[in-house]
Image (tube, rainbow, N blue to C red):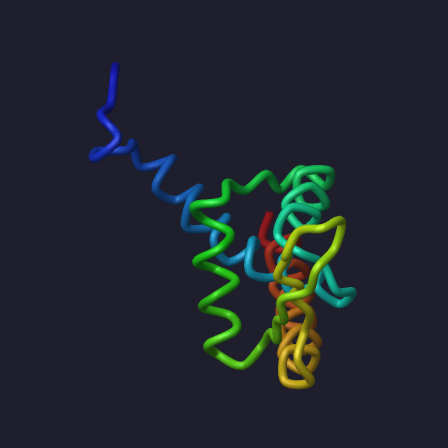
Length: 112
């Protein structure tokens, strides 16, 4: 049965919901070391977490607005690139989220 993009099947909706939280965690973890958007996307894709630009950049802006990331423009290879990294708050939140993730994972494994 075909579905239009407006009416995704229940699995797709739930999969996207699950993925959203995981992406935040993956982005924060990858930004323990400073990166710019392109290298961040590449690193995430290499770990099986492909993300398109239209999703990544709004996410980076949101995390920066929440005080979890800091960014700065720098010139590299004759081009201006915006470099992102975890803020001190971001490091703390990542640590807490990872602990939460491990706890949930252990609980789920017990249930499964």
